[in-house]
Image 1 (tube, rainbow over the protein chains, first blue to last red):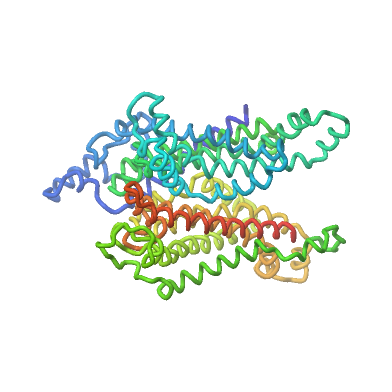
Image 2: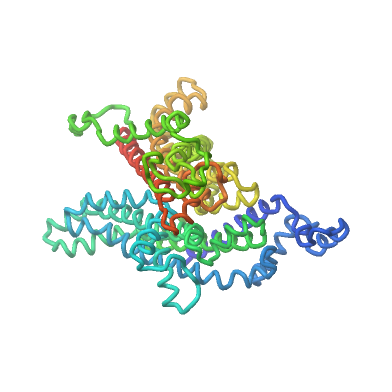
Length: 312
Length: 283
């Protein structure tokens, strides 16, 4: 419990520092939001008035605190390109991104861990898993996306080419199947490699040999001595996987034309729409920190040694 | 790295067997670098030579991989594209490796609050994916190769520094460091001439593995339209430019550029894993 509180405190500090860095960097970006809002025919005086009204003349730290205070209440400012509040822009897109990331995460857990365990259950498949994982890990998300579109949407016609965010949940999941596979591919290969490596390490352990020589049935040994110990590194990288998926969704959403926060981020960077960039960066940073903190806590829960070492 | 060398049980035949896969992979990489350098000599067309009458053609005798939507020769653009595609990650890894080595050795050597501060910083950097750092950098500095290269150098530093710090910590307690201090060598001389050379196999392995990941990230940034700008030839740009043609039934540009990325990353990863195995065996 004490450990959990400490992890939580560390996570809050990381979020504040990371968001302050992003805020400071983006305020260095070229372009004047006041001039952009005022339009082409604005006089220097009216631009200055808008600057004053937006509070752009205040020191950086004051502006950061004001922004963070607004963000906590759901006020992320105004989008320059869409002329509407950032909050109303993000709300519908956040759900789409969330479904996509969770869908991909589920695929990774099922196929990544499954593929990693395959050689233990069926010995001759060892080289197959090595080769498949080695190739899978090298395929960038956007290349996977285009190959999937070419084969399953264009050649076979099984799935729609472009995803839409319309319709009920079932329909949305159907449209997000190819994007989720593209997003999951390289991480599935990575999880398979980690699973294989940690299971193998356990299988070669002395405790397994001892259990077998004492006549414990191999199935029980595998379940109780191999799987349980091997699950520690797998759970730990699950957090990293989640963080990677959130970043990867930026690419997949753009490739399939999905209206999520990832594709909105890319559009907003190109359009110099900094309030939107700032809001999405904050959401992503919070998501990363939550994912890594959860994996930290899970690691400590599974392995008492970690808990003892860190709180000492 | 014990002071007294103990007889090992590693079979000699295994150690001296020629590693065919390793040499194959090295051969492919050398060929790739030669292609990148000699692109103007090998390529049958200029990368920006358009021919609107021959747009979106499939492979033919004149155009080995067909033409893109502007009638440019895809094969020539792939060859020229290897330059920017490989140069970017090479720069990133050079900067990140240098920074990683310096941070790892200096934090272990100085210890104390400096070590704690560096470790925390690396932990935070490690938690944020490079792709997001690169996108924010582009928002600040504008599209192009500069912003993503700076951002990814920063993002890949912990990837190298964290593992090196662990190894440097182990080496720090070995007898040769203390011996060096006893005979009056300066800390700089010990690090430079003894500690660093001992860590080099691992540095090489980590840098190679990071190269593949950096190449994918950088190509993704270019694919998103935030990195290398068209009409320049780069593989991520080519995948993006070919996407419209792919949807219209001309997949050659996207798929050939995408496959090129996959092959290079596989080759680099195999090399990195071999180097890592060797580094483990010698330490």
